[in-house]
Length: 345
Ligand SMILES: Nc1nc2c(ncn2[C@@H]2O[C@H](COP(=O)(O)OP(=O)(O)OP(=O)(O)O)[C@@H](O)[C@H]2O)c(=O)[nH]1
Image (cartoon, rainbow, N blue to C red; front, side, top):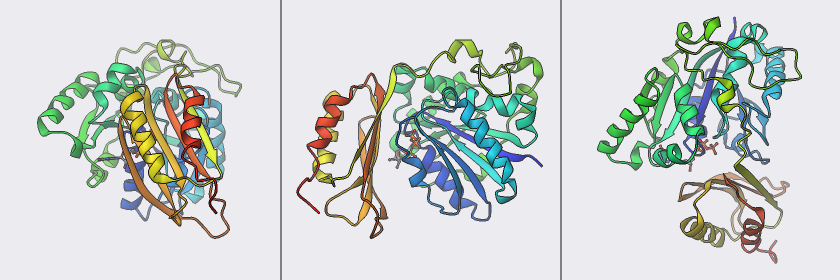
């Protein structure tokens, strides 16, 4: 039997990893395999997965929909080799991935279809920030329009009236998808995982697309199809992109941080010069704490959370990633270095 695959998409910081952890803890009996894709060089999300028994494959420094498309096929092949070790596969895409590019192998390549069935594409939508994202980027629209189910997330952050308006907007962007509501304390996991994609609408040969990239693997692009009934959009409209104006800057530091200073500096940065910084995420070693601190920003909202303790013989290396439009490393590096505690430890 092919393994069920759930594809998690949604713009940067919309809540994919948070939902993923909710699914994993809701289904303790299910053996999950997970592909974690990160746009930045540093792999952060893999470390935030709460269930240690999950078979995690991390792919960083690019998107599965384009630059890492070949790697996806290699990972699927490797997973197929150990298919008796897991029951279901979840793929968390990067926050700027075009899910149709990730889905294509599952929909088109017989060799992949034999082993895996794409059951659903879930798109997380950040109720607080989606309007800005739709205005400023094309990626958010691609993600919403390709999904089978849209989870309008972070409902705790906006008013009920605004939520109703957003639901209408989402339905107009993708009339085929079911729109569900949720937030991190109450996700409708059962409902989400019950929804299955309408294969009749998307898997007809005439509606399928060629592989997005000319790839070096054995699977060559098939003929271009028509898309009258499909939510899959024509490849040439958006697969030229390698997310050219969106860049990621990754930093690593061996010296510990003064977390309070770092938090304040980043908050100020977001407040005054934050336009174009879509996402910050970091695993931070603070000079005074025995545990990792998880630092995140989405839009101008900064949060800190406690992570796991550092092990006694573990190197306390901080990693921090910025993702945004046309970011230049110099200013970020200076800011970060200014928050290090050089004379400690
Ligand atoms: N208030 C609130 N915050 C949330 C909710 N869901 C997620 N968050 C927060 O939003 C931030 C981003 O969440 P993630 O789950 O890391 O988002 P993501 O989509 O995986 O992020 P990327 O992988 O960088 O694209 C974190 O600080 C979460 O705690 C929610 O329902 N309500």
